[in-house]
Image (cartoon, each protein chain N blue to C red):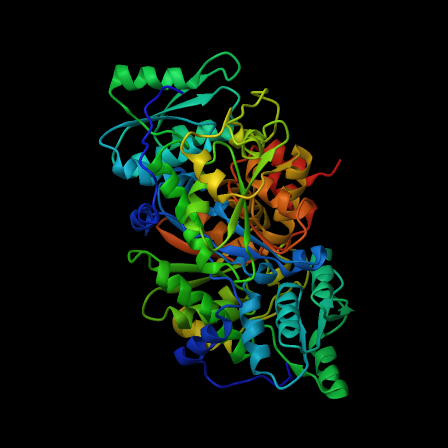
Length: 316
Length: 316
């Protein structure tokens, strides 16, 4: 990663400032709890419903906070949720946005990103390098790069989700499970909840670079680039900015299978009446299938193609 | 209807008191807006997501407010959403609840009501009279009746949904569309929004007793008792308490088809990432297909059997 990243350390004041920028623009999402689900599990599960956020994922938070501080038009790369968050935030701010998306992103995410007014440039995840494409656009077209996670403005924006959790979370709950791609949300929420609750990252099987990195103490890479339904969180390696934060604040990383993510989607549909995408359901899956106590999870996104959703609702 | 109803007029102070009782127990639901949907419609639509309320519908509000003021164990009749709201509220208050439900209620609603600890008594909607069964239980077992809508405590509880809408609604929006069975939610919300916005009731085709009653000035009945997917809102006639309130405060009633409700469910899934049942989607359907301006709607419930939901998501 040779692209310029904003490397200031992120403070609680940065997250508070982000919350001020988001007020009146982002959805103040509820922390849901389903007594029917608690009864089935024999313990309590709290679900921060970020799928209800503008553009259907928490990414609008970081996108808006970054765009609000950018000097002009912006470029970013994203499998789709950060894309939509930045695209809408840019349109709201009267800026142009260019988004570099993989060809295998869900069609709904590509369509919606264009719908929010962005210029979409597609690349092949297996053979092309999105960082190089982004760097070229910064040079050629004078755009400002917003990294999906290795950007202090983005991390602070995602941290606002943690501030809201702290306001709503029952005192006795001390663990918050957070899906993890590059770690922007997990790092932001960990900073916002420092001293109040411990964050644990959740990744899909085969893409557990953060869990292995936390275990080994150095940033590990994933062997695979494709091969999970959880398209939203398939990043190659932990972020340069996010990893030290999570090393300091996060508990051991957790891993779930695609099948568990699909089961969590069905349970969210049934008990919480929210629509999740596979990557948005991994923290709930970890809370349901790999945890034994009262716990909070972030349900991070709901931008899902119809066939994948129907698959989750139709047990094989 | 010869059962005793609480007939005090409902004041704003009653709704404020209900809000105090609900605080910390009910979900403070968001008023959602999807830029992608606005763009498709060419106008703005705001959606109060009461499907995220405890027990999956706004009915928990009125149920909790009524149970909190009841002297002992309670009985009520309901096709399922009021049933669940009262059952959970009673369990939280340490009371017993008996719920009279039609045999053709969605299985998920019957199961969940039992799951919340209620005793469920089933009756045949076509041949039996739920009011008579309820009155008998009041006499035989000393239970206190909570009418699903003709009860000032219930109406005031539902009104808290209107207080929240008033806090979140952009100033320029002046119409709020509300699904209508007996009219408890519509009346409560109309009272809470008095002077701020006008409520319009929305009913399924063939069950438009409120629309016809508002037009004629007297309470009309429905010919049919069954025959709509919108099981949640198939009441025979407007309530004694609710009708005068709506006569004074509501605009003309609106009517939608089952097919429109299913289309609204798919749009809510796609653009808002919420799960709605047909009866919970009629106000959104009216806002989408029978309105031409900026408007707010209440998405009232999400307790839906899987086959009905899959039908909504699978265009014929």
